[in-house]
Length: 96
Image (cartoon, rainbow, N blue to C red; front, side, top):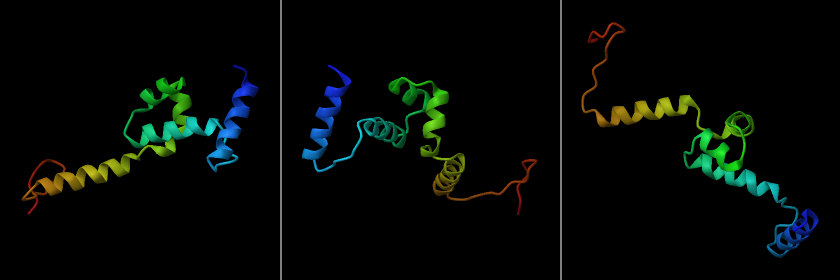
């Protein structure tokens, strides 16, 4: 099948679906976004899309949760699981 034929079929389908102007390549970005939102790694997404991990990160890095988000979540979950929290100093001694 030729590229022009696929393009024509795609444009007709988007008009029928009430989404004229949606470009076929946008489906690739949507797929990557869905995979990232469900926790897949950069390596897994890159392999699926046929990219190198570097290209994948350059394009989609902003979609992965930041380390700060994960750190806050880990602390929140850890505190929720603990009935009594003991603060410790940097040398490991309990702080009263």
